[in-house]
Length: 286
Ligand code: PAF
Image (cartoon, rainbow, N blue to C red; front, side, top):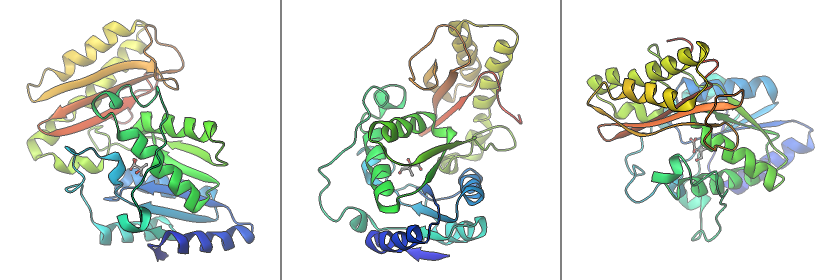
């Protein structure tokens, strides 16, 4: 596995890879890797000749009051995991290498970016879209892999790729969950042991909703109420949003159909957690 930090060096290495007719798979991450990230790399390995994993804690997607400086990092462990999972090049640029000058350009995928997460994090998704676009330009991948855990992010990147004609296939990969159903996230490390136990209420509430829908409930209002009641059974969780939306447009729906996605954001202490399900499938295993 090659370690590269200079974007220009990566670009010229990959120009050669393309001349050889090889396909390139990109797995963009912010590091502190868990099994969710590993599943993306493993999927990329099965579909491409050369796998580029990037670790870059992107300052553009954090607002001033967020956890940029304390975001968990462990580059030694991440390097080992990337090697084991089949990464060919691990790209870990410093902030100054990615953004050698003040960044004046920003990509904004309107509408999709201002709802759900965008309400409390209004600048987040332009930061994500801008850095992902830059990574696409540096790497020139055939395919890029993103977790469904960040469902809204995935839809925004898909739309950006369509709108800007990026020749990249965006692959969404299933959420990987812990033994009790909690979606794996680098930020789970912020939870103390009591909070971690309480967090299992999130997948339980989503699974409850799935069971009601399987039982024939189609109206989204009672589904949202079921989730809310379940979540608020713990005084230590507060709800940021519970929404039932069209999975692609992210617009709220009043009846569940084949395209529906249920999304949730909560806070436990100072930690904000997000999750989502396809309500017809629910959570497996729980
Ligand atoms: O999902 C993430 O880890 C980040 O938002 C991404 C896509 C790597 C962009 O910084």
